[in-house]
Length: 434
Ligand code: AMP
Ligand code: GLY
Image (cartoon, rainbow, N blue to C red; front, side, top):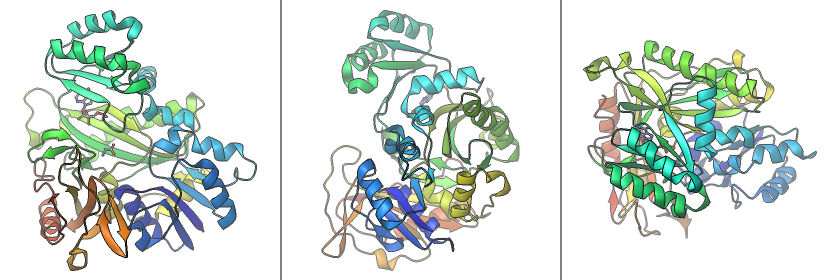
């Protein structure tokens, strides 16, 4: 088979690494890819949302399947574009239709969907400029901290968690006033849930689903979960509290109602669903008994997580291309998934200054000295045959271990061998739950 994978981050390098291991793959292209994906496939200089360019390439190269990494092309309707085009309609796209991608593209849609299907999530209401005063009144009925979410896509920046009522009212006004452009023309205000986050992933063919290894990501820049939010500074899999008992709650209350709900609403959904969950613990529960908690959906994403994919792909033993074929042919039920029982930990090496402004183009050294870790490239480029930094998140250093501690130690050791100007990484990934 000839596959085309869209995207250019650490998630896509991890997906490409896994796809390339399949004996079914004759040729793997990544558009646009990065210096890491070039090691496992062939990069193509096309943007992931250049539908006409992608069409021309797919037809020219005789591509058999398209796998979509990021949400943007899905929200813009790439799956619909393929299905509506006579020359492309027989080529499966792994990723939901535009209607399905609203689970991520519109927070208000996602909340309404959960309400319709009785899926546990924080209580909420949605407001616009016209209903600003009602929004302020609703804020007064909630307890601090206050959670405000821009309805539309904001590259992960559209959620504000605000400590006081006064600030929440001001932020609501600013958001509705265009703080995130049109994306915040509607704002979801919701109840704050306190607990421990966990990312759960499934692949679905629209009828059946297979659950992939779960993971936890670390979003804050600083150790001990301090400082501003980033795209993710590392991940671990498995998550100790996500044992069979807790995962059964997730499956019964969240996964099955979501897949069934999509089908009942006539939404064409063939791809990944990423459930961003909060494990809410009953008052006084010890963290050691966290599997007693109740899972709530914080958000849906219609793609894999980054940096979760990096650890999930390490632990997925099943041939990913066979799973994709199951999605494409509606036979996913006959493709059970098996996991590596080892732990995986990923540490993200980022550019100094990230998540605010940072420089690009610094040479990276030491990659060849890495032993027993797998390094996925997140933001790199090739310049005169040399790997240079090309983003905020630069490299994901991932390792296996008999447990999380051992995997973390291996990733730390190897992260220390890689050098570029002003590099930074967190040393405490997973320590809170291991
Ligand atoms: P989102 O983009 O929806 O994932 O939100 C970003 C982050 O904000 C999440 O990963 C959570 O850490 C936090 N968050 C979002 N909604 C809530 C909520 N209702 N209660 C507590 N934390 C939340
Ligand atoms: N790691 C969270 C995300 O990919 O949105």
